Image (cartoon, rainbow, N blue to C red; front, side, top):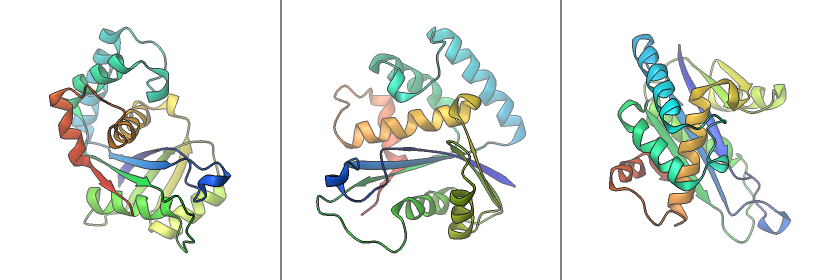
Length: 190
């Protein structure tokens, strides 16, 4: 069974006047095969050690230069991933399906087009009701919530979604040429 690690950035609420963020983004990355997993974990340990950053790898906790260098060094071993960015309209709109589920569906269509059985591991606190809704809405086998500090995959998802939001909103002015390839792993949501 395939496993996908997921993280989000921003607030999925619709009404900006009530404090919802202007942009909401979702990133999903696929786990590699068992052989690739060992290579990925060893490479991540090497990258993290060489950067001399001993905190959690989170977009909001790192300075810009360190973020870019981490992503640049991670490029050769990046697992398949996709992000969806939603730039919300100023006026709130009424939706039957939450945008969050639509964004997850978009990522799954890209990363799991054969619709193989899969599980989602999402950064966050355990929430049975939300897990049940995601399982029903997406037709996935299992949904688990775990804190990002417990998984290098969730930390990488956090870095990728942070990058996509910053890049899509023009907050990265000195994007290294080699990181421009990450733009191809992003789509926009309405």
